[in-house]
Amino acid sequence: MGKLIYSPITSLDGFVEDEDGRFDWAAPDEEVHAFVNDLQRPVGTYLYGRRMYETMVFWETAATSEEQSAIFRDYTEIWRGAEKVVFSRTLETASSARTRIEATFDTEMIRRIKGSAPGDLAIGGAELAALAFRANLIDECHLFLNPIVVGGGKQALPSKVRTRLALLDERRFGNGVVHLHYRVTNERLP
Image 1: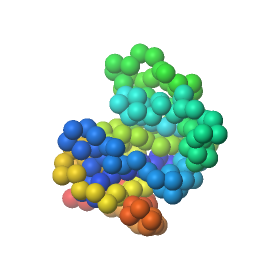
Image 2 (image 1 turned 180 degrees about the vertical axis):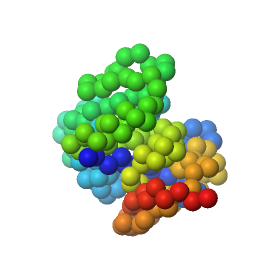
Image 3 (image 1 turned 30 degrees about the vertical axis):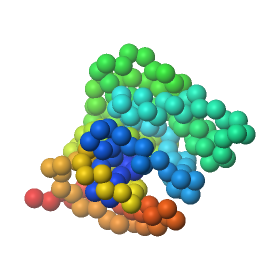
């Protein structure tokens, strides 16, 4: 059975993008990117909303020449090798291989995928992750806290959801990013 993992790169005040929709401040350096690659390596399926998919589909056609870093080329291969499920009411066709479009986020379908998955699943996008949190589908979180305060925007974690998390690991990177790895206990709080 695969685990469903949410790994947002956030500002210190908990946003994945600022009020203007920008997230350029979240670009990982080589050290963080190599760490992310190792976390993503066991992922067999990515679950995306349309906007996150449209951001991530870059990796489908990213150049893998020697001009790119080994870390960049590694992530390109990791992403291309995984299945992708995109939840969208407006997207009609996929722009990448190994990708299917689903009109609605079906929690029972996600449970079936988790139950039969040979590898882990990663969910990308704060809005989609919020749906999964509310349905008690998220098993783990890898939060990457960046040393920046953006003052508002799209929250990394959903509001009006109270659940306990168990800290499994932590790491501090040279650029000031802090990684926090949690298991979601699914113990709901009042």
